[in-house]
Image (cartoon, rainbow, N blue to C red; front, side, top):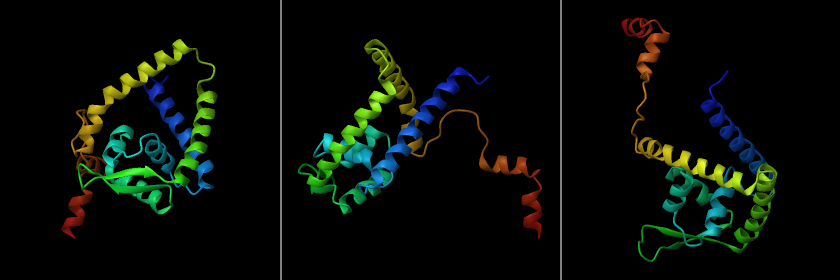
Length: 178
């Protein structure tokens, strides 16, 4: 039997993939590509936010977020404006089209919330939310370390060690002698 810890994280992963898959399919007809809805919601809920803040909230790397936000701009859902305090940053705002799409996204979110959590009591929801926040706090330091090209502290093989183990250590030597 798989350890309970693994089952919990696998269930969370499965839930994420379910919601992501459903949303990507449903929102495609509105011109939203893969996961762009996530960024649009944050921008609509926080007009004038900057990309860095969205990255921190969503725990997404800057290059991925930047590409998605740029596509939202090109598609007419969002526009950028020079940030008054820092000219390097651009404040992000929803367009009228973005705000209309946000209404659709809110409706979908409410439906998903009700479907997934509708039979939970208020006490269960509060407890569950507390556990999820604690999990996020536990993993955030590792996320930050890895995003800065660091390594998490667990025993692992290097790619070279794995290669040599899989190939009996001789394959690389034979190729270099030829």
